[in-house]
Length: 414
Image (cartoon, rainbow, N blue to C red; front, side, top):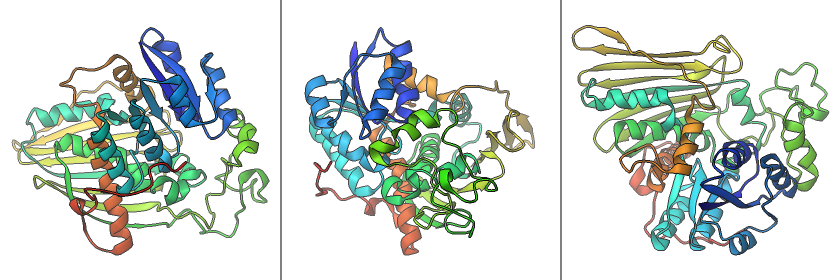
């Protein structure tokens, strides 16, 4: 029986971890405490699990009193390194939501602390557990494509999902590192995993073309906006889970879940293009748009023996809502087009979330490459770090130049 403490009591911490751990894994796992900067949200998480574990108002106190075997980190991205480092130094292993952290300096601190303490950091890349992605991995390992030489990867966020990053805390790079870190870390990790390689150099371009201060008809937040009746991005915090998780908790921390997606303070990009060269010579071209008319991705793997085209479209709006498309086609050197049979999977993140949690709670075979280490988390984030720097400076960035061997930074900030 392992004991778990949670830091971060938002939607992800509650429904990816706390509720299913208490409901489905009570024979192997017990929750011994939760900490969030918003105490009301912590209380809500506890009530939704039906648990009797303590709610803490100090992370240090939780570590000292609860003495968890494992700390699960689902807080704001910019705080990940603080909680991970403290937990490691307290003798705990750590499971952290992606991204590992938001910049190369914090990343170096995490890796060095893990090395010093001998504890383990696991990053939760749920896309590795999607059956669709597993099929891509199987095909690449079966040598049907030969040596992989190039990946073309387009990711589409629709105006329901994509807009949410521009009304929440993610909208400031100081909190999230931008979409190239917070969101694309998933996508970069999948490519690293498929190629079984690490990035060497990165160039990128990015801009904010759709969200941010691009229209006059805007306010501070939806709940008191003069344009709420006409704005297609209006959300009502009295509906669904919004009220309990956010509206009723506002007086604790003044975090407003319905901020305007056209605000001046938004400094993350919504239109992104990245080129990556890998250590073994493969290349990737990647793009992300956060205002597409539909949700999903298109990936093309090119190798010395053929080409694979994968399409995955779903989402809550657009032509694929309620009518998802999952398709893989293989084109070989014998001029054949082969449709790869697939079983359409349901569940959060294409069936990845449940499979990931199962592996975390019950363990997985050492030969299973899907469980991601801190190194995997660092290498996926590194593409985002390098891309952010390339956008700022206008030059290609070498991954090796990002990390310093002996970083010095305050590790005890709260």
